[in-house]
Amino acid sequence: MKFITDLLSNIFMTAFSQCGYDKALGKVVVSNRLDLCQFQCNGALSGAKQYRKSPLLIAKEVVAHIPENEMIGSLEVVAPGFINVSLKDEFLMNYVQEMYFDQHMGIPQAEQEETIVLDYGNPNVAKPLHVGHLRSAIIGEALKRIVTATGRKAIGDVHLGDWGLPMGLVLAELEDRYGENLPLLTTELLNEVYPCASKKSKADPNFLEKARTMTAKLQKGDPAYQETWKTMVALSVEDIKKTYARLGATFDYWYGESDSSKYVPELLEILKAKDILVESEGAQVVEVAKDGDKQPIPPTIVIKSNGSEGYATTDIATIIQRQRDFAPDQIWYVVDFRQNLHFTQVFRTAQKAELIPSTTKLTHLCFGTVNGKDGKPFKTRDGGVMQLSDLLDAVVDCAYEKLKSSDNAEEAAKKETAEKIGIAAIKFGDLISHYSKDCIFDLDKFMASEGKTGVYLLYVVARINSILRKYGGNGNTKLNAVYSEGERDLLLKLALSGNAFLGAYTEKSPNILCENAYQIAVAFSKFYHDNRILGETDPSKRSSWISLCTIAKAILVKHLDTLGIETVDVM
Ligand code: ARG
Image 1 (spheres, rainbow, N blue to C red):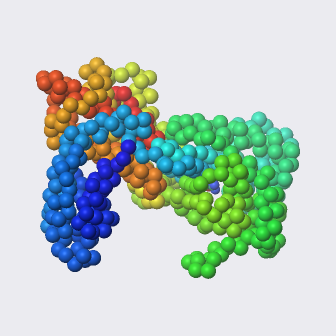
Image 2: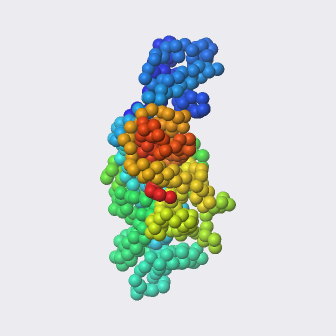
Image 3: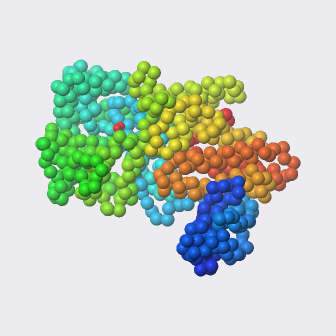
């Protein structure tokens, strides 16, 4: 389906060029004063200088050239030269009706095939998921669904942290404790071992050295280390999958950093053939600094002096794998801002080595940290790192407490609903601001039943469900007319959804979809408040209103689903 803004722009462009002005001046945008009009064209103002004419004159001339048509209901020239446009109700209504029946719900689909790999989630083996991993999973999942919704191929890879020093630290600690006689490994044991080993490595350089050597040996394929490591990975993945299932984060691939290892020999060959691998203090590195860099960019370490592969190596070798398996047009890395330098090094190395075509775009979507209300990184009450599952439990408990008072559901159903509400509250609370900002974790704010919250949006969907339940179905999904101002506004907000989806894709910004979903919810609430839908005695009005409820729900749910947010039947 074509955007209303594009359809209107076509009409205006023709008029501008008929009057002898630059066609491009005819661009029509959504009004920023919706109380005055729905759309506006500001071309006369931009053209005034170019044509040395008063903008008011240009605007009047253009408007006189716009023929009566099926779209435009009112046209008004306003000083100093704005053209205000509103649609015919009939057109608006039919447009929204058509969106509902469109297989993509009016969301514009990419015209060319495009594949985007999304690297997100990024949990680490042997370390429990912490709140920092929450954002990558939430933002990455929303972006992946936005890519799919706009007709592109999205491939999600969790890129498990399973190959670096943390592995050696755990192996070293296990060896210190148990020697050859390893006990049965459990998640609990691993969760306890890693923090202990990490602390020890900071105080004891010998232990750190031992862990480094063990990491290198593991990477070279030492059979005993490999065996323990495989058990560690399996245990961690099982645990991580449970938390991701709660969050509704779904991955096409569960590759780990370790899976890139088999591409390292090839990587080294390419780097050597291109003569860009140099030796520096025993390590093998690639120089990536460029003239004009605002900060010094140190060389990328490909092989460390002890022979092990570093964090950058795994990312660079993974690019070879992704190019071979998926030939992506873009790769998006949803990783926090602290890894900015790392990705600069990785991207530059991959480009210098021509591991990908020069047209392939590599983007680091660097998000901010999860902070508490005090603006400091979110911690547990005793100051430790908050584990993700504990945080999810806390929010879900809060949702359950609120539901407990309403006694219209079974206990088990309440638990299930509380889980969905809690997760929706966190996700919407995170996604409503641009990802680059820090996320302030404020439970009361996230759980508020009014305002830009997941709870409010779920509530509006549940309200529509309740109307449709009482009515006994979805109606005939046919809109008959626009009977009230509230409906007109709701229809407009629904009609602009395609623009919001496209905006969310091009700006890589799920917050645009959150905002549009909120606007729809508010407009629906007003429509509901102003009209007695079920009590309406005029049958065609009532039927049209029921249909509007059905359509509004479908479009709202499409927004939420694309954000990775599940809705509930009753609340
Ligand atoms: N696992 C890493 C961490 O928790 C993040 C990995 C980010 N993704 C990547 N391709 N390097 O810090």
